[in-house]
Length: 421
Image (cartoon, rainbow, N blue to C red; front, top):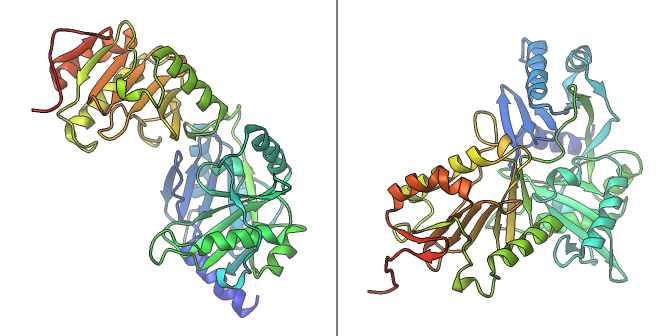
């Protein structure tokens, strides 16, 4: 290893290796120098130096048991610097080695810029083009991370030719370090790495531009990285193990924006509740069985009263959701979220994601079949709960917290409330 490569490995080893990723919708656990990342569909193990671990078989056994409990296949990243003890322990525990990849690190300043100006992946991209690019991504060689794992958590740049997107690079800033990661490229094109370096050079805040880039590659992808200024600092081999059974196909919590299900659900909500972004100031058509309360006492989402309200609604939704239900949180022209209520909340799980009311924007929370949910109207400063089963769970507690009911079934109940003095 050259002196430059050794210095870059030291930077990676001290800053990135064994670091818990900051990724929406996943759960991370530390076990000494080990980090387990649970995506709900699969898991990844990374670690710092394990030479001081006396009971390495016990650490591997605990890790396997944890992924088995969650029903997640797991990939354990083994570095060439780790020595044979870890490899032997993993093989004895039933892990199977995959294809080794080169771990490549570059100083961002050493990677050339590109005259080709890539576009952010999702902005204005028709669904047909998205699907075509997904197929291109699926055919790409295995690299640092699959795009399906972090699709909504990274920068995804597309290169275009003749008004069509033809290639992708997906990358992420490794928060709290001097690194950005090139998670993968679709083909061995220098422009893709140059575009990733240009993005890494962009500072989101003072002194936050990245100084280093890290990537993993094999085969024909390695020379293009080396030519772009990367150094091969180690070899990394994925060791894999899967528990019996079929893993989940989606995360417990996902973001949504241009996904077809997001748009379709929004259209159904707008049609049923007779509201659009342009007409939201006039409120929605509240359905039979709904109850609406004043929220004038809440000026900030961090208000303890707001948290109590959210806790009541979360308990009601948890009690009334059915197997297979998905809970959606929607805002006009903003990323939404979808939650599997049966897989969030409680020890070792992603926290319950619930938002019924915000003082500064309208927010929708609804099951996929629209049978129950909430609508927080920030202009009227009101909260509507609909769906007889949900109302039955929360009405008494919410009335105790919020006081007078404003409407039932969309009709005033005799209370008068106006803006102004």
